[in-house]
Length: 530
Image 1 (cartoon, rainbow, N blue to C red):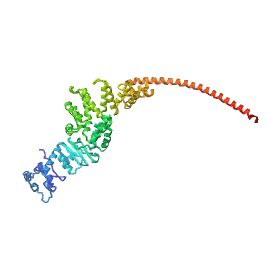
Image 2: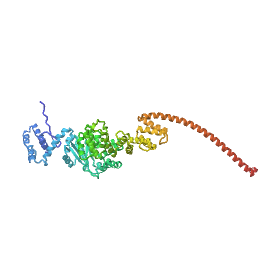
Image 3: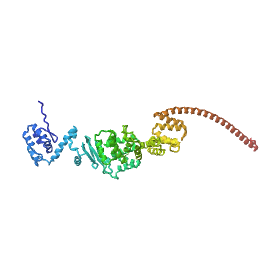
Image 4: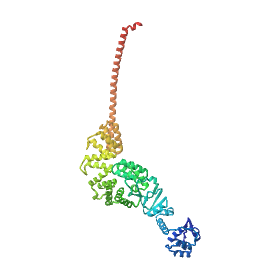
């Protein structure tokens, strides 16, 4: 027969195995806890304290003098100091312990059950107690950003919102999140808030003004500011490396948007984003649309994209453009959503919000005249918008228009300027075209060597035409070098003959001058002295 294991009770950090040890280490809070969860009766029965076990089993937790009766049954002296204990609190603590053990076997967390919150009220109680480490478990929580110096640790994917207020300086709060993906409750924000102002400036395409605010906010570790700044660098200035760096920083802080962007696991993205959308968060609208699109639920995806676009969310406008163009995430788009003319509506909206790549694509659409009638005035307008944001392809496309006089007056100098801008950004097509203009001397002084430089660079970047141009330019340089040498030699001969004639002339003039002086001196009797 297997031997029965008799577990001790824990009191004041001591393992209690006998009733004498219980009396010596008596702690009313612990004993009440063991009473409510049934472990006290089991402990007594396992040790054959049958009279005490029977008496304890007969107790009701509703009795007003429960504490005194319990102490009497266990033989604890009345001299032992006790405080008034809230039995409901004890019961809740035991419930929390039971739930906690289902989630984790980490003894450190279990030992700190009083720092674990399963709901908002428990969080408030723990904050009132001044705890500096708080575990948020499973539930939904709003974090008040008025309480400083707290580390929040997530257990089993809690839904957490930061209750933001105007001009929070996160760096000064010293509030940290571990294993927590948080969203935003922006319902308390007013137009005095700097982040609010930056997002409005984005809507007005005042990106430099927005940047100046956002740079300060990211220095203050404002998580949402990282997301908004990343949007500007990605959509407007098309600096993907910078945007990715910002997103990584934001994700490390716990921001839901950038957890999603870098594919960190969180089981409740959709639930959290729905709640944020209900609070009017336009960025959440675009992200929620993306999650539905990833699930191939384009009805809901388009619904939330439309909602975001109505609030001037650039990512939502971008998504709708690609969705209706049938170019969304390499997905097979249902036919009812393929509407390229409708896509132009969102292309225009995305352009107005600073989306440089879509601005260039809009230019191409009007330039080619396949979806709409060809309209070079519109094409040039969109190319120029995209160029103003530094879009590489737009620089190349507009350069071609100036080179060919397509929609604008032909201007080789302007073409060279724009091709060079695109070429310096690494676009092989522009590198080759710049080489051609240098080779021909169109809009720039002819320079075979510089043309060769750009042809070689374009060829190294995979441009096949440039590879042929490299060979032709090298042949031309060799030929020019040979002609130059013959010309130089002929020139040297001419210069030599001219120099000889000049020296002979100078010699004759000098002899004549000496003869004239000598005659004058003889006339004056100068030589008679000798």
